[in-house]
Amino acid sequence: DMSLLELTRKFEGKFFEDLEALNIIKARGYPRATDHIDEMAELIIDLEKNGLAYQSDEGSWYFAVGKKEGYGTRLVQLDPDQLKKGASAATGGGGAQRGGMDADEYDAEKEGVRDFCLWKAFKPEFDREDATWDPVVELEGGGTRQIGKGRPGWHLECSAMARKYLGDTIDLHAGGVDLKFPHHENEIAQSEGANCAPFCNCWIHNGFVNIGDEKMSKSKGNFLTLRVACPTSDDVRAYRYLVASSQYRNPLSFTDAALGAAKGALKRLDRVKVMIDDVLSKEEGGDNNADRVDSDIVATVERELANFEVAIADDLSMPRASASLFSIVKSAEKEFKRVAKAAKDSDGDESDVVPPLDLIGLKSVQQALEKMDQVFGIYYDVPKVKGDESDDGDSASDDGDDASVPTDVMDLVAQRSAAKDAKDWGLADSLRSEITALGFAVKDVKGGDPIVSKV
Image (tube, rainbow, N blue to C red; front, side):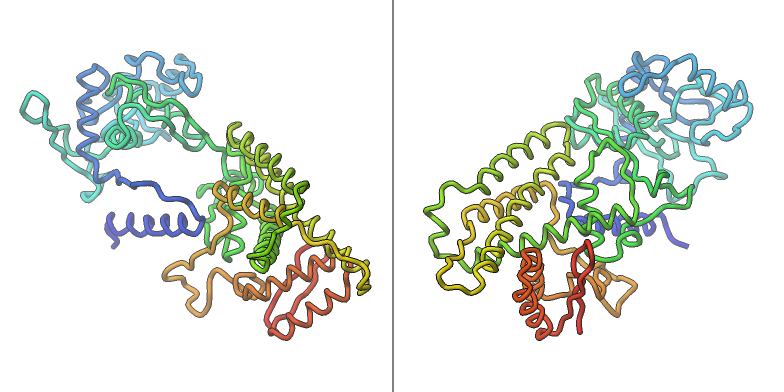
């Protein structure tokens, strides 16, 4: 039998592994609800003092919704009369039966049918001993107060921990669109009722993650974990790009096609970055086209960086930000193709001077990619999961995963792709021979990126 502590620590560990895998910047702290029971009890006492909380005969504590002006109107527009009818029907007209109602909200002694639970009194038939508490509150004027043995309601912990770590008023609160009511409306009511101050200045609600056309949920049997949905490092990075390039307010449809498109976009981004890094590293100490001041690439980069910042400031319009990213990438691709084509057209004629690459422009692209990646966060190595079931190999790679191919081989593959785009077949064949000599094979895919595998 697993204890509550063992169970929560197990999934806490998986949560942090996923944060690291997705390259998510960690918060300063991750307070646990079970470590803040005293703060929750104090908030209940504050609400009671302000006339907004009461204890029922069975020992549970409830928030008196009818006494809080404006309840249910901050994030949604609720009809109080309809709420009363719905609650009455759910309790059988007068709380005589539970029906399909949440046990935490059922109590025949509630003063109002809309009142929500702050603290649920301990009941042996429902509760386990290692998930109940009996806190003692120290009162300001001296003395102590007990609220009774039990456990917190769904909403209380958020208000209590927000007050402790962020103060009475916070700047930003995020969450799924389905949490607007009742959870976030109840948070507002609790926090403002106890603190007598505005709770939050700005709310951000994200759309659902859908599997195909349905919301992902355990009840529908379509619930996926990150490592099941994204078994390779390329998959994980692609999922990050898929999310980061989407509009957060809209539903996100997770499908094989969507993930495949994101992987294709990432390979294009990776290829361009590798080509630019390779060229610039070879040209270190040179004049970097110092006399070329009319770079079209630089002009494109400056324009798209400005568009990128406007998009970010406009309600995080990430699809527009992504469009700016690829406009910059395209300018670099065109430059490589321009020079490759000129080299092919010269056909070895020494009298024809092959124009040099616009290194100043490519340097500006490199810097732009680094700046934009502070938001997209896609250029990183996905860490291997500790204790992964597949101990005989890297869980974040497979035979066709670029992560298992050396960088110098991928550089040659990228150069070969550029040569093919420029129809320089001789150079492309020569590069394929070099790749083969290093122990790898390249398989071209119509309409997609080549597959690289060990010979």
